[in-house]
Amino acid sequence: MDRREFFKRSIYSGLAAGAAFSFGSLDKIIAAMPYRPYAPFDLVAVKGGEPAQMFDKAIEALGGMKNFVKKNQTVVVKPNIGWDTPPERGADTNPALVKRIIEHCFTAGAKEVYVFDNPCDNWIKCYKNSGIEKAVKDAGGKIVPANSESNYQEVEIKNGKKLKKTKVHELILSSNVFINVPVLKCHTGAQLTMCMKNHMGTVWDRGYWHRNDLQQCIADFAGFRKPDLNIVDAYRVMTKRGPRGVSIEDTVLMKSMILSRDIVAADAASAKLYGIEPETIGHIKYAAEAHIGNMDLTKLNIKRIKI
Image: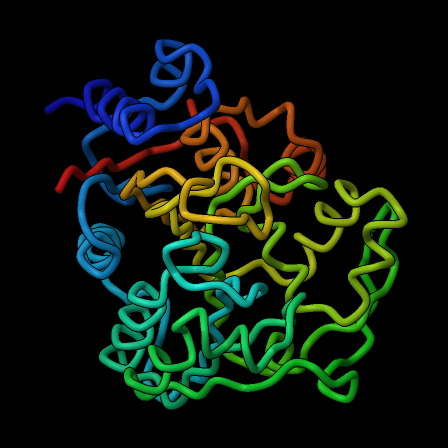
């Protein structure tokens, strides 16, 4: 199967699963993402498997987790655990994916793997009912709270236009490796939740962002500490009533995943997968203009994998 056919099937699968929105021009979306058959790859897009299986294939295409995690390093894995909902609602990152990422980190030689989020709902219920707490513990990782301001340290955001300083969770500042694992979904304020938006779970005062140009604040913070790896969970995608959703009917089973070192490229590809042009999403455009990453997918070497 060639690259164009892969993306067509990816999008048509979402539509067939009951998506209540338009993916836009299929030809335009596919034509903007060329595939050049040589490594190293800037971005990997996987379609068709279960979360752990897709991640195995994707990380292999990037040379394995050893290219990101070295022996005796500490790793922080930041999924979306913002909501007290079960996995089938698509509001939080898929726990099977989180578990598999941690396992790969330890196989690569990690000393410790920490997982946290600063949820919107009660953090204890979010950790438990999302299935992520059990997944982390089963994989040998450590899930830690983020509900106290004492866990955060104030930092300066250099070159920030709206966000000049903020309090960041200590694990983002102290860990050797930062792996960002958002779930792709719609969001009333940011339009979509993806990699850059997932950073809001690493800071203390999210309210400031919402009051002071949310899109620009998201872009400003994206340059503070770029993740070593971005992994977008697009297995079950929330297409309405985000970011929390109400029922499984608010989601589409897309069985997809996107990986990239480049946080802007990962968000641009995720927006394309969802059916939205990246340049129409404020924080993607602003981050690209600030040279935090590349939203022009035509300039990337993209590896596609069909399972």
